[in-house]
Length: 270
Ligand code: ADP
Image (cartoon, rainbow, N blue to C red; front, side, top):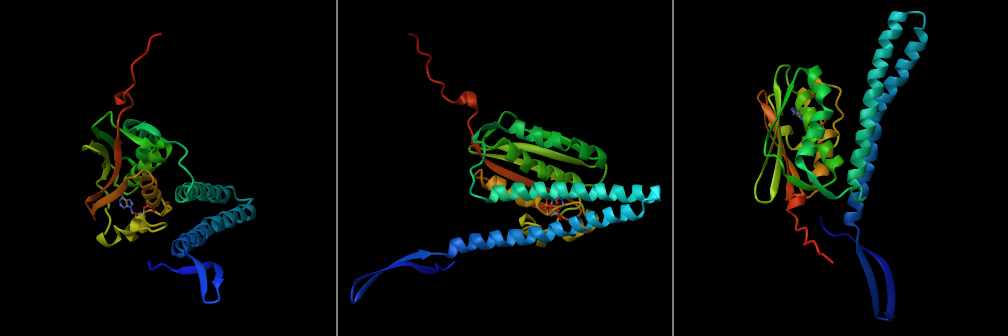
């Protein structure tokens, strides 16, 4: 963007000469605008489930002498409340990733550990969706960063792969590398993503249409979290997809040396 300059100080040096101190406010304004959009979108997204929770609570109160109805409303109330829990925790993850706060951990972490935590966290989801998870590729690789944040990123890809796959299909998590990059690829044989949506799905709250019709439980924040998480680790995420065939999401991160490969120094004897 064009720089936009504002004067922050003016010093009259002589009757014909004034010095101005200028500051470019474009970047600051952009960040501020992004923050405002985030708050606005977030409030909007929270409104629906919060409204549903209070309506369902009222419905339960007025159906008090009909146990069948109470059970029905209570079930829906629990579902809405758990959706709210997921939504708020994702909003918090994303706002933390978007802030300039340091990541809480910066150490050498095992890719196997990241993948295992992502798989473990979605075992139950996979089982109830009738989807099998398989893990393939290279073992023993390392990257540098926050294992929690990276585990959540890979986990979000796994969660989507399961959610947008038909029963009986399988989701593959594959790890590969070259001289300086590790690639973690999550592949499904699910509904796929129309080409026109592929770029936009990484935006906050963006959801592709066929999926929206099929699955209303999502938040539209999962991929945005993935994008920010890997970018903060000096990596990126990309997608390959064909509607009806499936999708592959690939996270690429800088390869780090394994802890035992680091020079340990000679033991000195006194
Ligand atoms: P959501 O909570 O809606 O899944 P995400 O940010 O994780 O939000 O994903 C954004 C959109 O991208 C989804 O609503 C869906 O349309 C599409 N999408 C993401 N992953 C997949 C996948 N594996 N297969 C098909 N569509 C996907």
